[in-house]
View 1 (cartoon, rainbow, N blue to C red):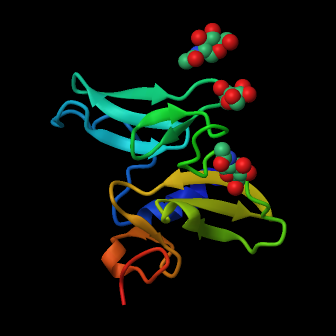
View 2: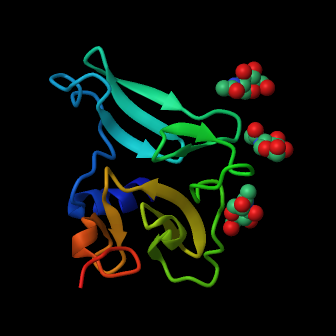
Length: 143
Ligand SMILES: *[C@@H]1O[C@H](CO)[C@@H](O)[C@H](O)[C@H]1NC(C)=O
Ligand SMILES: *[C@@H]1O[C@H](CO)[C@@H](O)[C@H](O)[C@H]1NC(C)=O
Ligand SMILES: *[C@@H]1O[C@H](CO)[C@@H](O)[C@H](O)[C@H]1NC(C)=O
């Protein structure tokens, strides 16, 4: 269920590589980021996809690409589940962190979070990661 809901998102997403990994790094520059999430990130190393995973209850900060203890540094919503019991199924932006991440509610259960790629923000109207200029406040700067 979780993968199919993301599959739908990927099809309509501006930029995303969630899913099949393997060939992305063949002609890519060293260190290129393939996917960034609360759990860590995939990047290119020696022409292959490598994984950097946050350990022991830490979560990735998207800006610094370091694993942080959110009890001490609170620059991400990762690690804070949302009460989905009163929310309808769907994708919701993390407004507190500038909508650089979003969370998923399904059957009134919290299904986790995902970061938008690069400088994109979550567009609550279109339900995709989009350029800030194309998205209305508070997530974007569009008009
Ligand atoms: C995570 O915790 C384990 C066991 O406490 C420890 O051996 C390991 O070094 C820790 N890893 C990191 C990255 O802190
Ligand atoms: C995070 O920091 C708090 C406060 O110092 C500490 O109690 C907790 O064990 C830390 N958690 C991790 C996962 O390092
Ligand atoms: C981080 O945010 C959570 C959720 O809003 C809050 O409960 C927690 O106290 C915050 N921690 C810090 C260190 O500001």
